[in-house]
Length: 65
Image 1 (spheres, rainbow, N blue to C red):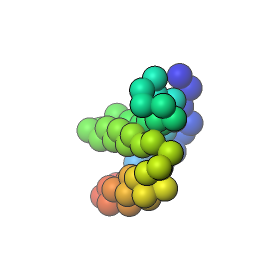
Image 2 (image 1 turned 90 degrees about the vertical axis):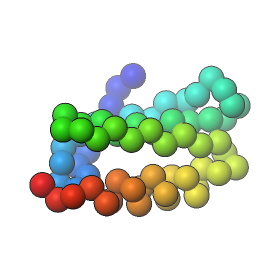
Image 3 (image 1 turned 45 degrees about the vertical axis):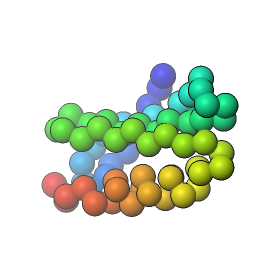
């Protein structure tokens, strides 16, 4: 799994997007960085837009470094 370099709240980290084995069409989005944050947002095609928006909103709440 290869991540891409990102910055959220002024903190460097890596974002990953992986397909889930179950449920069908499921996707996991991960954000990890060296301090203490680990986000795992999982969705199915029916809820993807809403859950991706909620995940992005949560990432925007990280305090500025």
